[in-house]
Image (spheres, helix red, strand yellow):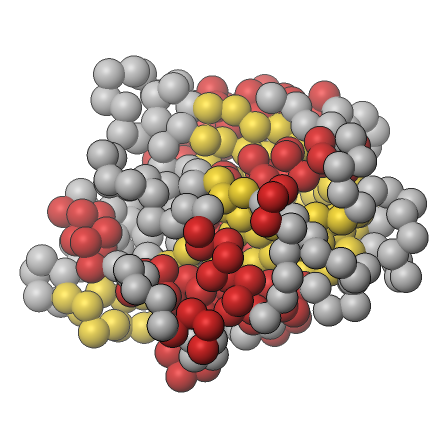
Length: 353
């Protein structure tokens, strides 16, 4: 699927294990800093799991309007505390008025369980961030790492159709969930003693404010989303009945590149999480799009610093790419991509604003 072309990124907000703001996170990732530490959670061998977590005292408490709500899980509460400051920061100084929020959330994983967050989460998030959002046009997309690209595609289409003047796109997740960690541990997907093809569980939140190119926003944009492509991988990790050919990412990149004529990309922000599984997809896609990727391209994989932040990772990648372009730290034109554990795959081309 190819989204309508073009949107300016006005501002970003971020919270990660290496920084409580977008600026600090970006600087830490550039410096290669991580916060991988043994946690209080034990794996099945009774060894502490190494995780990339935000220090709990650094997170704001639940807002009074949210504290009295019943039925919130520990994971939802932590996601609210992660997302609140990031969402509020990205909206500082942008055009006034309620904006739609298109939020990438965790996948319904393990299979058969409901998605961890739904539409009600948006109301809780608005209360936590102390903002007003356009609830009628807001959505949660429970698609994991690639969810932000589904959100970006929907945002670009809405902006092109003039359904709104500006829109917030983001993602939030935490893997600090005992049932989820236990499942991943049994599958030997978590990096631990004797497990070398695994990842460091993380968490975080990232949000971006988008507007139509040339709209009066009161300031220069950070960068521009040139195009977005989304697709599905039929042979994903949990679809045992279909061969894994790594064609989902190729299809997403093909759609993104089709709407982004011009110079090849010279920087790639990759959605690797530490597992070798996704290397096949990148190898297939890179081989098929050599003319669109410069020979001397630079590849960035921020999960080396923030761990696998789940649905937040894709949003972090886009935000970090936008900031690097704005600051002139990377050559113009970036490719950003991320795969989910299930079928969703996404890619976007960013350029200077």
